[in-house]
Picture 1 (cartoon, one colour):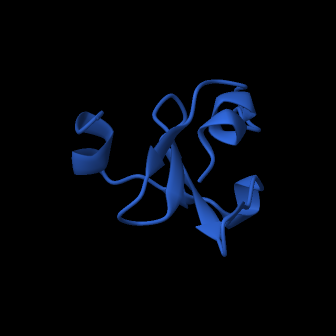
Picture 2 (cartoon, rainbow, N blue to C red; picture 1 turned 45 degrees about the vertical axis):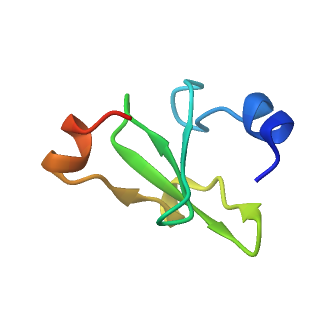
Length: 62
């Protein structure tokens, strides 16, 4: 994902910072413990499409 695009994106729920997880093709919001999918290079920034982070993922803030 383009670094400029990533810098412009914010969590749609809390407007906080997102971290890219390349391994899972997701944008992570640690404040809300949500992972937004990136499909074919396009971030899906809908709360209904996001998955909830597991406890281990919440503690692993890279």
